[in-house]
Length: 264
Image (cartoon, rainbow, N blue to C red; front, side):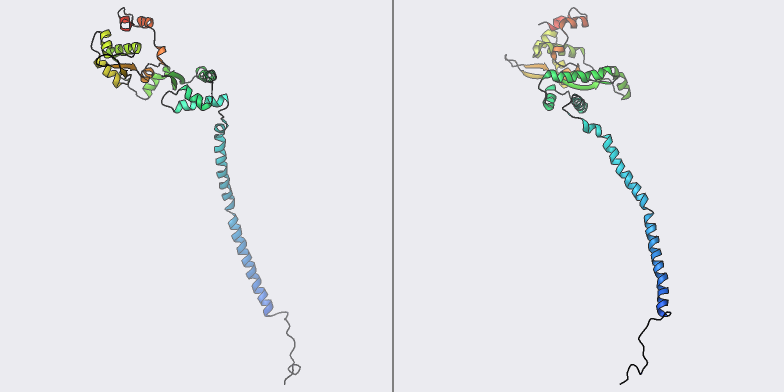
């Protein structure tokens, strides 16, 4: 057997120069290049980040602005005078028909009419004291937000509104008799006018200014006619108690024969 000493073998040592050093030299630039590329990628990756952050900042600021713009609406409370005024003004604005005070009071939890009238007085005063084109009108037994009469000509000109057909004299006479003598039959109306009133009655029915409210308990059971809510709205009346008196009508028409139409 050959012994290790005979072959003059020495333990393996790492030389100072050689493949190991070459490997280290080759790996070194490779490592540095890799790091440089990585650094470059990270640097290029951070360049759009400020832009992204700015965009996010803008998006977060916009909802904040929206919240600030709607803040006054969130602060409205119906348990305050201002909140109740704002609510009444809002529902009158969106409603096409006059609203009954009793329904508004029920929703707001107002028990006494004097409390409601106090709110309405303050709200109506705000329209009177300011140069506004609208006001709250009491008509048809309710409340309605409408334009001031002084604006009618401007509104008709702006919207090119043609004047609606007015009532004829026979229709006005018939309607006046019904308003003051209701419920009344056609025979009674014709007797007061001295002429047949069937035509004016049909015209008023088509305009929904009058309606049949019953039958008179006499032979033939003739229909009884009365005015409608549309009648109050047409003439801007809150209820029938606001109709002018017979004396006022006499002065308006300036005719001696006219009171005979409304004689009771």
